[in-house]
Length: 234
Image (spheres, rainbow, N blue to C red):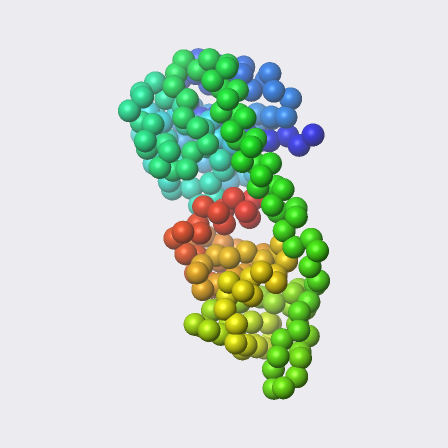
């Protein structure tokens, strides 16, 4: 059974203890740490992979919503608060759920079920995406069908009705749309922009603005940022 790693962030000790007590009743969740501030939590997130954050919204120095907005890699989040009027802020950040204090276990369990549902769907898609596809394709170039191995592709760029297939020392240009080309790819490729697809095995670094493949920087589109952070965490 997979264990999901959790981080609890709340400036109130009793609130942290209540979430911790609820989580300990569930076998497939592991509590990495409980933190009284966003500063403490940042230190944990820099060192360890976290699947789910329980995050209080109203905290001193830095609000939970502002803290979450500034994360480059965003784990799934369940917001907790004593203030009902913060619900909209939480859902605008694509939160799994929003729990009003004091948190009863039945409501807590419902939020956990939502999280598990999204995770299982995501993992199923990743597992099955491209399972039946070959590890290469043939492209037409200079009246020949040229074999291109997927593992040699760094990234693919759209140029209207054409796509550029960028390899380490060569670029192929073929008449194709990016959407149609994407359907031929395996699970090792991810769309990061309306004009770019990258090979995740070639990524050397990434920020919330771009992905680096060695010395090459490929921009991340605004509509793809959350999906990329979630995808690259698995």
